[in-house]
Image 1: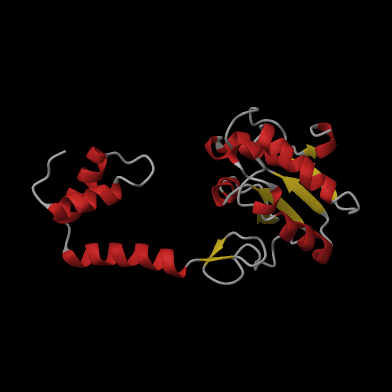
Image 2 (image 1 turned 90 degrees about the vertical axis):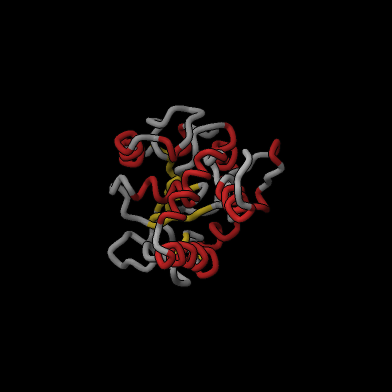
Length: 204
């Protein structure tokens, strides 16, 4: 793609690094910004910069936050002794959109996947174990993607918690095996949360 300006080309290249954004879409976005007031574009850039530099991760659950403790963990109206374990922050957002869950979360930051070189030590598993022991957790809900990697992660964590007495469940398999949690429709995800079952029925 031949562009008349190196500044324009550099901007297009940066936008095209975003997931799902090709060169043509990137060019359309950049040309749109060129039509905007300079102050609005400056505000856009400052907002992105502040987000990247100032955003924090909750010290308790590793969710994104504006403070050391996220708004979910700090909300006294939520059931603090119930923890929903998820792979990433997108899954927190997906479950929250169902408005069917009133507990807290724990973001692992991934799932165990030896083929991808991801082992237990690279995930936020020890933080979860310590949290359960410290907070007298009543129920641990696994809301991981229903695939081999997700089940392997559940099995590993369940073994780590074999001496703990908290109830351990997983979301019902309304989500198709091999599917991705973030792409599930809200009705299916809500039903899976509401009809969660004991982990022992799925992980042996």
